[in-house]
Length: 464
Image (cartoon, rainbow, N blue to C red; front, side):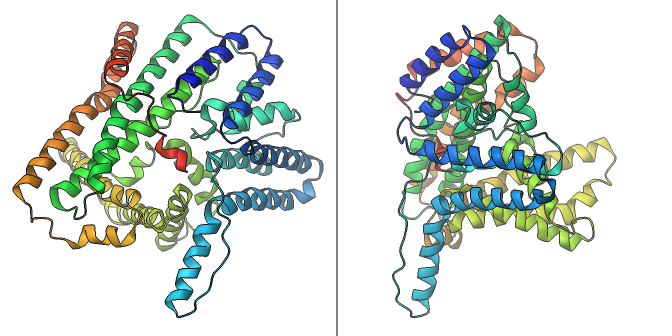
């Protein structure tokens, strides 16, 4: 069920209307049933997988408290089962096909069996969310919950189930367990988030997607058109994914829940370290807290720190998809982070004068933003030969019509993205202005009605 479909709007309206007529326990049961209906709307068998992960991690956490001597074994069982399911559905065919291609390259003609199953939508998101609970219980940061229904709702809460944000149990479970209230300011802010999310998806992201698809379909993409394609795709992803987060947060707020922010003006970051604190915050912080800090030796040597950063970004790229382009994208960002951490960060920290520090910051924003556009090519293009062709052509050879086309598309994409990029700045200048928020919401609603793409297309991150 797409957020941008009329069926979801009707579904949300019915759930919210009934929800606030019930006491807390009944509210939780209604939300749990609604969440499973939402998730299994197209493929009911998806519900079996999420129910299995839920039961496994709920039981494992309780067993850790009852049998503390087996905590490590129970955690390993949770990790193996959850990551095993994720690996089977998301990565099995990819690794088998890659192994088969490698054997074929060596002269061994073999035919290996593939699963060929549909990837369950959102499995990467709810797997990490559920695992954060068992890991926190294992580390002693959280007490296991006895209520299976409360924990099941934590894993499956429908606003953020399919594409995040990946919530921590320490934030969401207490909200599930306590009484929730609603008032006009909360409704107003929720409606503003929903309007802004629908605008970014239906007006900005889906319109830019038309240009992106046509640019990447061109046989010899290079130079200005290649830069335009990278820029347009980066803006499409940002608009698309942040739109999902806004709609998720707005929907959850109507139900009395507060979900974490997933983006904090990421294109104001002057370097990769700051960027990953502002972009897809729920995942990047999850990887940091549950993967990076678990790798040994980061504080012992700069070489080991660099290796751990590369390992982390390799896994970060692999999480995004079963393809070599995603692995290369992860390593590209990991290498950028290593280079900055080892060579540039120690130098920039020594600059104390505000004027050169400001110039360094501005220069860093420009350089890193350009680097992001290059990285977007890795993320978008799954054919490695085509990807290699992007970087092997002369970037300065242009036909006049290509220059005109590139500038035209670039200016059009900029016109669509500027309101999206400037909105956080405007709201920071006047954070308490309810009138401004409502005016922006009405403008967004009007734009969706008159300019938006009818029905919308599937969110980009549904593929992950």
